[in-house]
Image 1 (cartoon, rainbow, N blue to C red):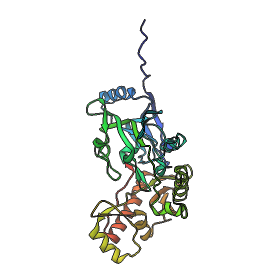
Image 2: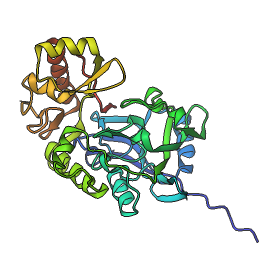
Image 3: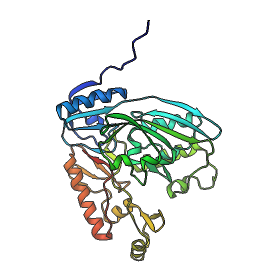
Image 4: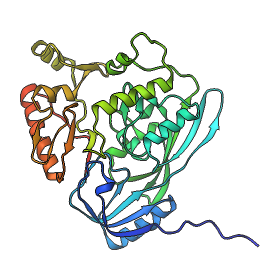
Length: 345
């Protein structure tokens, strides 16, 4: 006798769910109805219900890169698809499949525990694996895109699961095809290709300082150093609400960079694509006097001007009001526009 197919249970429905513990800014927000998605197959069932009722909707992973309003109308899909496994390995690379709901930092630690170095520069970035490619997360000279093989996602337009190659993802600095087409895809699985050949990447200034006199650190050494740097620069969301870096580092033409450099000799910048230069947004904000400043219930972190914080009882409106003040001052002083990094729901 044939056994019945293994059909997952429907996604758990959670009406009027409080989300204060599901976003790192610690904003008081309530979802009209939330669906806890633990298997890819549940997404089609949830989307059918959403379409039938014509509900607005959004996906929420770890809540580390979002600004939530007091009420999220319609449906909120809580991405809780877990699991990670090595699916292929040869002399050149190891291929790993990871569920979209896996905690990003825990996955990075897992790769090192399994002797798969490469992602250590991306340690302690908050959020989930499924959210990582949308933003093409990066830090200390490494980008997620460097290690992507392909991505599996539910295509809302086609109402079907699709596989997108690395090229199809159209990755660029803090950008991707997913980000350019919001609410088109729900990422369920990310497949990484980790090369067997490895070399330390410690050329960024903060990281280089950690290894003065040590030109050959291990991947574990780099992982611990990155954790140390980020812990110093970024407040623990469990202690003070924040979403990490709040603004993108702006990229400007070399001509504009040279003009600014004549006026600001200490201008902090990094090479980018030919003809462009990337400025340190935190430095620009600091020069405008915002570091450590407070505006009501929100403010700018005292150790890193790139981080906006919720001192308690802050709202999305408070955070965005402070952000606009910063954007206006930086534009007036430097002629540079700052783009907000977190998603505004």
